[in-house]
Image (cartoon, rainbow, N blue to C red; front, side, top):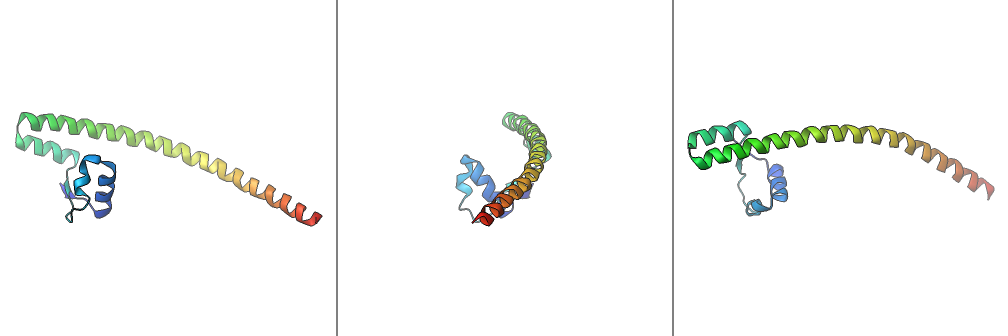
Length: 106
């Protein structure tokens, strides 16, 4: 369990509609890691705690899946950016050449 930073709190409030009540709170909320949530559920030892434990584990699994797919997507975007970046320089050179030629005609 740990406190969110002010920036993390702002991001959580912006992304989670059900947490808008935290927006104007002066205190930073505590959050659990996946393992901390499982430990808390074990300590509470109730049917609802077990259900929440399963829910949390599934949420963390989904988060890992999204992050890994975003890593692949980020790599592909970086590759595309590099390709376009090289074309961008070539396009700038062509435009500059055309501009200089156009200006010299006047």
